[in-house]
Image 1 (cartoon, rainbow, N blue to C red):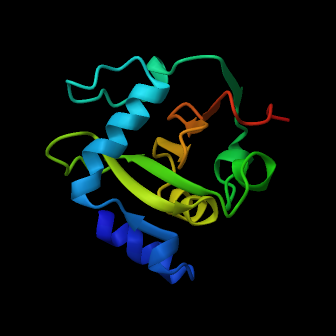
Image 2: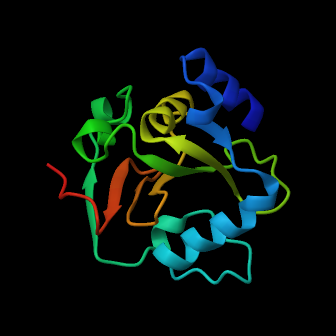
Length: 154
């Protein structure tokens, strides 16, 4: 599914440098840094699927409307995140094809990550600034959760 998602984002006009899967040689380090920075999840175990249940505070959250949940691009682009910000994108393994950790990890711009998220509706995802200054996620309940480092949600 990783390859198909990359192809879908390319069809939306984003070049590879704006959205690509993290190399296997980087995957463990990036995922570990995200888990250590933003969750109470132990890094010596495979992470649980619902990271939003173990996020470190302070947190802000709001229930998204059905219109917000289906918005393309997602509501957080422009209102909370600079579109050209460099980010990591963690997507839940929506097909159950991964053998180990339940996430795909991508890197690119927030705008391209938003395009990727639009391709997989109802999939839990986490967008993390490349310097690990903030995280936002949308869970399967349609709740948008943000950590400190992002502006308060309108």
